[in-house]
Amino acid sequence: MSPLVAALTLAITPGQEPVVVPFHVADHGILVDCKVNDRPVTLLFDSGFGGTVLLSLSIDVGPATGEVHLRDFVGELTAHTVALKSLAVGTQTLNPDEKEIVQQPGDFTAAYGRHCDGILGLGALKSKVVEINFQHSQFEFYPNSYDVAKLPTDGKSTFLTKMLPLGGNAIEMAVTTDKGQSMTMALDTGNAFYATSHKDVLERVGVWDDSKTPSFVRKSGVATGAVDSWYFKMPPLNIFGVPAKETVWDIIDLPASDVRGDGTVGFGFLSNFNVTFDYSRRRVYFENWKTPIENEEPGDLGISARFDSDEKKTIVVLVAPGSPADTAGVKEGDELLSIDGNDMVRPTYRQLRAWFEGPVGSAVLVSLSRDGSLKRVKLTRQALVN
Image (cartoon, rainbow, N blue to C red; front, top):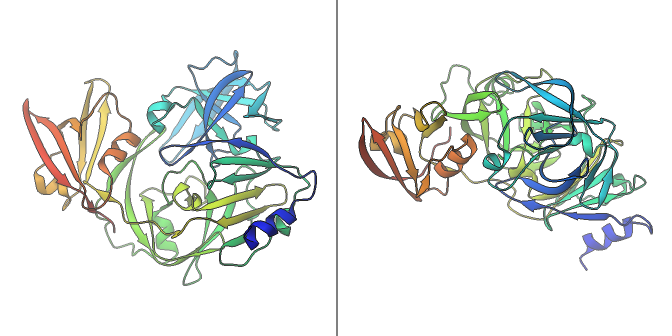
């Protein structure tokens, strides 16, 4: 038994053994089997969603009781609400403060690449002390008497971080640059990227010149539309109390939707740790189990596309200048027919991006149509990072 495991074992007194609930890792997200109003469902755990449960409108969990307005970076949408009568995550019964289910149209399975009926939000787990054990793909639910502040820390592989006194629906903590500038970031298991922030935030902390135009811009999908985004290599940072060397972030070319929030730290960072959060005591414990914690520059083709529901076609909407797609002559308005054999059957932004991106130097066969003529091009992914 390692010294760390021994210390963690000693920190658990009799009667504090956790309830273990397995989860699945798919497409940079956590999927867990739940029961909502006694209806079996599979949900993505998204700690960046402050509500309790968000379900596809196709799932019948009871009659609508009202409406709620949801906002993202682009706009606002209206969703139905249903009374929450019961909620269980695996064998763990939950009793969240918010007794409301949000339902909206959408194909979560297509969005996340594996059967998914909706989202399990932070509101479902706020009253619990919960470990997200990425190492063994399981949640560990501890009694509320379990105090993470008593766990060992060494500043090398184990870290204890205090949440910022902000908001009641998010785990907000500080990310600081090597120059001492601070960003307020949410712990967001639903963000598939390493971290996501905004151009104006980078300008504020002095890592982006506001006179500079970003290269390799792409379209990224959110609930209410699409936003311009691009990759940026950040300087060394302290992320939630953890030192990290250069990392690649996804940057959105729109202001943050909340003046108190500068973005979110996502799955790409978090999955390197076993993360225990105690919302009531405002503490988060990180145990590093996988190295390096820094991410590699992703390879990309420089294509942005969307499915046109009227035309029933997937159309190229943006080609980044200087990208492999641009060099090969791919044009905006071209119809995408297939990407490495993946047919364009109502693909989501998330699916398209997953097909466009991959290891630097890997080859991709793209078939497209222009004015009725078939064109096949073999593209090699490059690191399209600012």
